[in-house]
Amino acid sequence: MACGTPVVASTAGALPEVLGDAALLVDPYDENALAEALQAAAHDSGTLRRRGIERAARYTWPNAAAETWQVYVEAAAQ
Image (cartoon, rainbow, N blue to C red; front, side, top):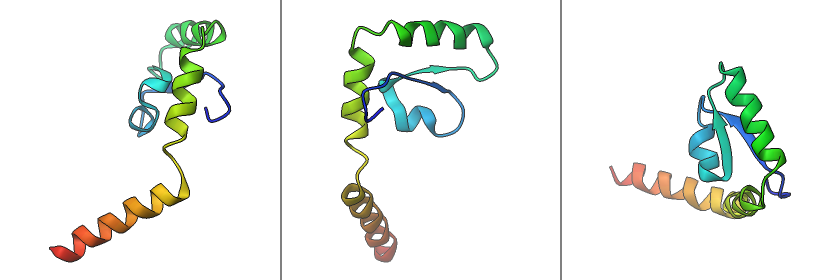
């Protein structure tokens, strides 16, 4: 995603939360949906690529550290 590659992923687990609208999400048990999503990704007009790069840019070590610190601050305040 960070390299501009269109992403097709499962709707299972935390993937929808992490990927948001930057990926095509499919039911992991639906082969037809997977095939359609792969076709769509292969013919992406650039939308998924752009969204993927933007989304991946949010996931940096400084951001992860700041968010983790905030969790500790909130937990300590309780």
